[in-house]
Image 1 (cartoon, rainbow, N blue to C red):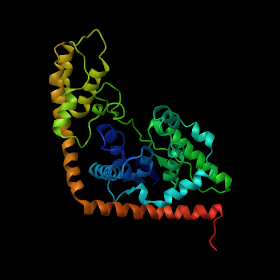
Image 2 (image 1 turned 180 degrees about the vertical axis):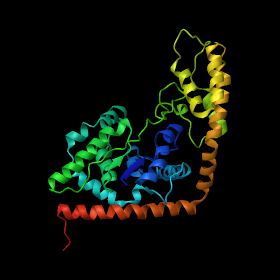
Image 3 (image 1 turned 90 degrees about the vertical axis):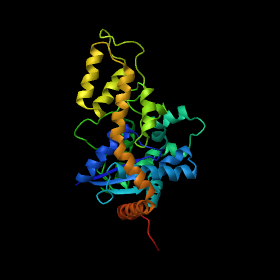
Image 4 (image 1 turned 60 degrees about the horizontal axis):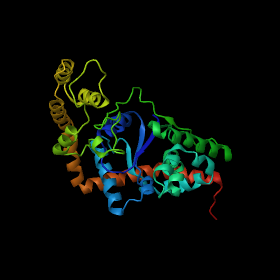
Amino acid sequence: MEIVVSGIRPTGNLHLGNYFGALKSFVKMQEENQCYFFIADYHSLTTHPIPADLHGNVKTVLVEFLACGLDPEKATLYIQSDLPETAELYLLLNMNAYIGELERCTSFKEKIRTQTDNVNAGLLTYPTLMAADIIIHRAARVPVGKDQEQHLEMTRTFANRFNRLYKVNYFPEPVAYNFGENLVKIPGLDGNLKMSKSDNENSAIYLADSAEVIRKKVMRAVTDSGPADQNKPRSQGVQNLFDLMSYFSSGETLNFFEDVYAAGSIRYGDMKKQLAEDIIRFTLPFREKMEALAADETYLRKVAKMGAEKARESASKTVREVREIIGFRQF
């Protein structure tokens, strides 16, 4: 059984792309591995959230983790800031991280370009904090998306550098988790290939969205303005609608709209109405679970406390041994 570590920033509600892209896989992982799943509230400080938002977003993610099937009895589910050992290991790793390699990080260069008024040290050292999150549990595998592959490579660099500097074979060099099959990529309502809230809030459908909100978003989805033309390839917006229908509607429903599209008589308004109802049907169980969990503060405190205790058992051992390797001694 391998040790797997993954985190998610508390930046608000999770959308269908998050569920199919990560959470559904996390549920499977917890059955087969020793998993540490954490809510990365330290990482979110690079965007300067106000206290109420930070706490509320952490609670939202915790509730949605649980509603999607993560089991605190099977996996270690914790809040990053409940693990002070992470901050200590982050500091120690920074002592052996070099400015040049951090400045060359693709995500840092992107942040410099897009948020010129908030280029903080936390953004620069983001890779070392991510490395601390991973190797504090001496993880073997990490599920990462394309945008995080460079950070994982840097984690391996930091782990290897520590081993080399102190002439030990202490930290494993973690590799990307192999899902064994391609993850489902949920397309956006705005015509983009991937559902995301980064560029357009209306592109994404959130697990917490009400039926009314889902209907409004789907009805605004990008399509063609004219009738279907079989002599031209489908626009990305139209293709996205069909792809979404393949995930959330019945085969019979999908075949019906494929047929009327082929006949040139499709009415996109009708297709959107049907798709909206099918998505509502899919998300309803999640919404009901989230509402019940959000109201049960006692249970949420229990889950957070249990996760912190389990995570600290692993993390405190690592930090204690790292301090000994470096040469810290008590008088």
